[in-house]
Amino acid sequence: MTETFNARVLYRAVLLAAGLLVLGLLFRQLTTLLIAVLMTVLISIPLAAAANWLERYRVPRPLGALAGLLGGLGAIALVVWLLIPPFVDQTNEFVDQVPGIVDDLTADIADVTGSEPDVVGDDVQSFLEGYTDDPDRFLGPVTSIGISVAAVLGGILFLLITAMYIAIRPRPLVDGILSLVPPPRREHGQEIMDRLRASWIGWIQGVVADMLISGVLLYIGLTIVDLDFAILFAVLTALLVVIPYFGAIVGAIPPVLFAFTDSPGKALLVLAVYVAVQQIEGNVLIPLIMSNRTKLHPALIAIGVLVVAQLFGFIGLFVAVPIISMVMILAEELWVKPTEERHGLRAASALERVSPEAAAAEREPPPITEPPDSQRGQGLPVE
Image 1 (cartoon, helix red, strand yellow):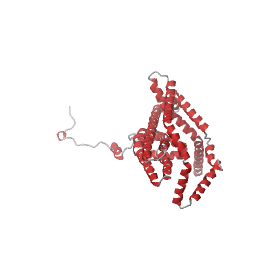
Image 2: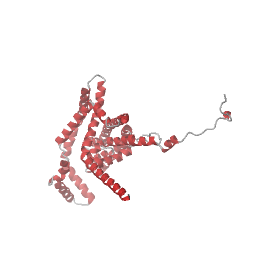
Image 3: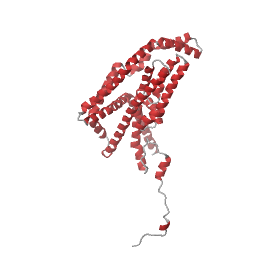
């Protein structure tokens, strides 16, 4: 009997390990597809909101979704039109100054390391020649996932068209997803989808506000410290703030290195500007805008970004917050609340902070109070 039991346990363990291995392989293969589907849904949400708003004025949904798409592209084009002329001028000027910047940076590195400038230059040159002589070292990771300009443009066009069709008729897709849920739980499934939609809309609004505020603050700060190409660095960093916390850190590296070629003092000033803006973003923008709209704790966002980067790679960083909010909402609705209900506890939100004292106070029975002196000794009324 014991041998049969052990064989059964071993058989289940082997099946479990094989299942996890297959699931892991499928997950790695389907990562890009999952990210594309999520990005399509995120794009369709504001388009559906625009179609719903225009539908009140008797505008057909197809026209409303198309108007929302054209309006979004027009807003992006307007921003590009305002930024591109100085952006292109500063970019061209920056490219023209690259040889001198490299020479200055080489001399500074030589001073720090104690090596001769020619030695540092030779090391840098040999490092770059390792990629120019063997392009596969540089192009290998890119070509392995099939990324090219045409593929990216085609993928973006496909996402936009698919998102517009979803916005025109979202109900069949929603009903199709709800049909996978048992009938008694479909109302709950609709509530979960509504929560996901509200959280993702809040993330989109927060990202737009964070980009605008961070970009303006960085441009003002870099202009005050008299850093050349201020608008170039501010725009690049503003685009990276879609990655909470870490985007601003990555965006600070190029301007600090560029300022270092001028003087270490200017590099410190530029670093101070980025630290100040990052503090405003981390302590004001993300808690007040991003966290309040998505109902996620700032620390959870920071840790979740690292986890998403490990699971989905670099491209997953741009939709890290929607992935984190989806995981938290599903965990709360499908596990936390049912567990609390089974134990007779209040169904507290997993995304809200509830103090232990408040939870304990709710579980305690009401205290027994003594009756007033006038009612002491009185029994039940006798008819």
